[in-house]
Structure formats: structure tokens, C-alpha cells
Amino acid sequence: MRNFHLAIVVGSNNRESINRQLAQALAKLLPAHFSVSYPQIDDLPMYHQELEGERPANVNRFTDEIRAADAVLVVTPEHNRSLPAVLKNAIDWGSKPMDKNVWRDKPVAITGASPGAMGAALAQQHVRQILGGVLGSVVLGGEAYIQFSPDLLTSEGEIGPRSRDFLQNFMNRFVTLVEKLEG
Image 1 (tube, rainbow, N blue to C red):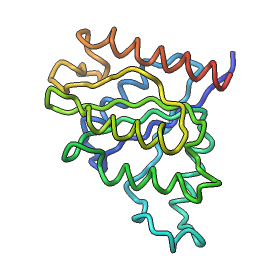
Image 2: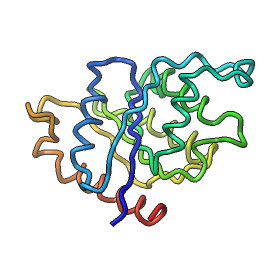
Image 3: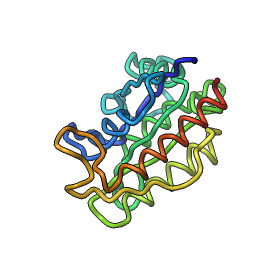
């Protein structure tokens, strides 16, 4: 069986982010033939067209990591009913210049958590629209809006029993998509 590499982009610059915790727990649900990395996005300069000619090294590092990945999982919080600026900035850098768009044809799954009942739903919809609708990613259908509650994760950092079946199914569907498209 072929090995696959999944880049997990956490749309937060908070090191203690609930979405970072969720991302790490989701990685534990992957089969053994999937490896993961967590590309850093909080050190990217704000996108500016004038920087495209002499792209900063950290921008090249980020786009190289996304380009090399077989697939991307985006785990995002919601800021003011949309995606965080740090995530939008990373998406913008990955899309430029358009002929080197690292998102095009890339299998992507999107999820995220918030303490509220809507579970970052609007942020996820915006990411879905940008990556799938505008930039040409192959986005996994379905929804995974997660309300972050004390029992979501165990003390060992794994998905708790109440959400495990739902999130395992979500990750299994994504694995199947990646294997079909990239296998």
C-alpha cells in the first residue's frame, strides 16, 4: 500500500488553540500509511503582490510543504463569523502566482471547532468556497462542525467517545478520497 503525506493546516496562531488540539487528535485517527505535518502559517508576512518576485523564505517553505503534501486537512476556528486572517493569508500565499497555485486539484478536508453550538460553521463555509470554488481544490463533501466541549478530547489528547464515531467516519471518508485521487 502506498504511503500518503497529509499537511494539517491549523487556522490559528494560538499555540494552545482548541483547533490545534483537535487537529492533533484527528491525526491519531489516520491509518498507519498516512504521515502528517503541521505547516507553520503564523510567521508568514501579510500577502502583498510586491513580494511575489522576491518571495520570503518562510513563504517558500510553506508553499513547498503544501505542494509536497498529497492532501491537506484544514482545521479552523471562526473569527467574527469568518476564517481567521492568519489562515486567509496562508491561503492567499499558496494561490500566488496563479500559475503556481498549490491548492489546485489538491484533496482537501475542512473542519474546525468553536465553543459555540455552530462549531465554526461559517468559517468552514468560507474556506470551502475559497479553496473549492475559487482555487480549484477537491474539497471533501459533507460537514464537520464541532462544538468544543470538555468531553471532546480525552486527557490523552484523543477524540472522546461521544464524538469518536462521527470524526472517525469523517477521517475515513477523507482517507478514501485521497486514496482514490492520489493512489
